Length: 245
Ligand code: NAP
Image 1 (spheres, protein in one colour):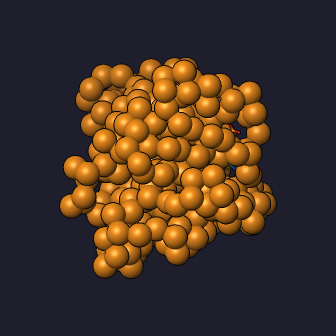
Image 2: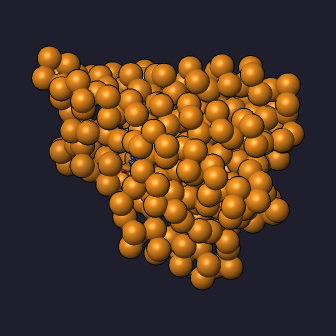
């Protein structure tokens, strides 16, 4: 159980982030999540959590903005009063584009949200978290199953995995664990926006468990890592992929 624990989840308005918010709230955590633009979706998540007796609030902060991570941590301090759990979930996955065709500003935008914001939220969280803190960064199976057109995305997530590994060494002495969770193909707007339906059928066929993942499949793994039972795991990359990678 996470009763009395304060958590920040980035990108909690939809998809995997929403499932993580709902799961952590169900376990008793008080969760603040951010989002970029989806005001209505965010309000719906807060309502759904409160309807079930949980505690969640939302703040609109764009993590592409260099000041976004600090603003988020300040909002956490103001609303939660302390920080025990940070889940870096928000990310941008644009339609596939070959390296030769990718404009530099597109690459920079992906890196700003997917990598720089993760580094910066951890930088700010590290100054606020105490003994027993938990950080989970969401990566992707695409760092081990590459294909054409995903360079910016795969590179941004490869960097996140390295941030996890180093942060685990730096924060371990203070009793803070840092892990990566790498989903496989998971049925969300991001996945449907970046892939044709036939491609998704093919991925499901290649997956040993025979289907796409659901956001809750990933949220349950995150809940394990941030809970008491995850206390002896740090610096790991847990692949929640149905066996795809
Ligand atoms: P999604 O459905 O596109 O949701 C993305 C969430 O991140 C939304 O809440 C969105 O807010 C927020 N977000 C995006 N850009 C942001 C920004 N600049 N500032 C603040 N918030 C921002 O994505 P998802 O499929 O659930 O993916 C969640 C995580 O899992 C990502 O890290 C992704 O790389 C990873 N992942 C997903 C899959 C998959 O198949 N779905 C596979 C492997 C890894 P708005 O609603 O306001 O836009």
